[in-house]
Amino acid sequence: MTGVRRLFDEAAIAGRVRDLAREIAETFPREFTVVGLLKGSFVFVADLVRALHPLGLAPRVEFVRLSSYGCGRESSGEIRLVGDVPAGIDGRQVLLVDDIVDSGHTFAYAKSLLLEHGAERIVTCALIDKPGRREADITADLVGFTVPDVFIVGYGIDYAEQYRSLPYLGTID
Ligand code: IMP
Ligand code: MG
Image (tube, rainbow, N blue to C red; front, side, top):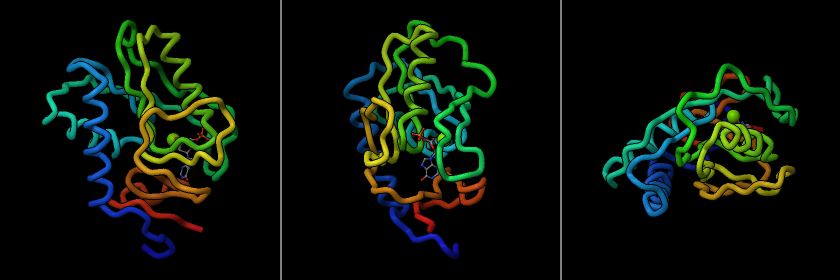
């Protein structure tokens, strides 16, 4: 697609997804809950849970929709829950999954939300980490790729609702 510079192709992503699945299998029992943040994590979650299956893990899969970005590139820092938190979080071990951890406000908000709903333990997993942009006091426990301050699209990740269906990860200026 014009204007998108490829960063990580399908094979590189699949390799990291397999590595992450192995790390997850080392720390979670067969039964736990994956909570993906919508919309950006939908492709990543779909690949990740299928990579867990051959390792003997059988997670429940839930999604939470948060909003902060609107259609711009900068997080407002004000996170809003859109809709409801799924039932059945109480007492569960949770793998919280997002596409990108940037300022960290989204992960921090989602983590406290799930703790309020009784999650027993939360491990955070981001496909992409931009550590240079962190504002909230949070780290992703599991990270696919670490990048500098660039704007990422593809593999579920959008800019103004475009580019989500690209099968690879790229940057736009
Ligand atoms: P944070 O709250 O600043 O950590 O932002 C995290 C959220 O912002 C992610 O769920 C993404 O949806 C979005 N985001 C952050 N960086 C990018 C980017 O480079 N491209 C697209 N979305 C991004
Ligand atoms: Mg998002």
